[in-house]
Amino acid sequence: MRSNPVRIGNVTVDVPVMLSVEEAHSAYRLSKQFLYRLAKSGSIRALRTGNKFLLSAESLSDYLRNGTLLDEKPATPAGGIRPLG
Image 1: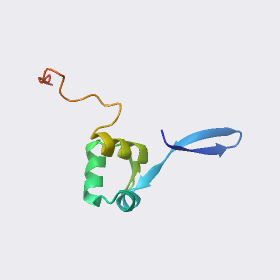
Image 2: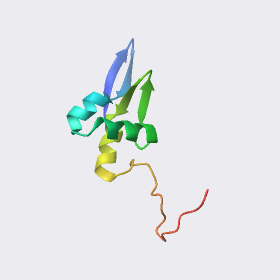
Image 3: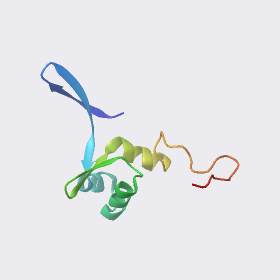
Image 4: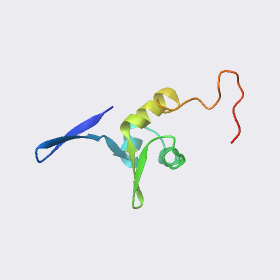
């Protein structure tokens, strides 16, 4: 997990690296519309702060590398039949 250690008083806390849609757009050369769609659908981890989205850099990299989050289970089991509901 990519994080930035931040010291608060005597405690060091790992804060995940978050990117604005604009930063992710510039860094990954993806359309802003695509990034918003990923965030709104829950395909990547994101925070909404007012009218702004902050995207998890780790989650976005995992999504681009694998097409899913690393801890996400495949939608279809090996037999090819998925449960309803």
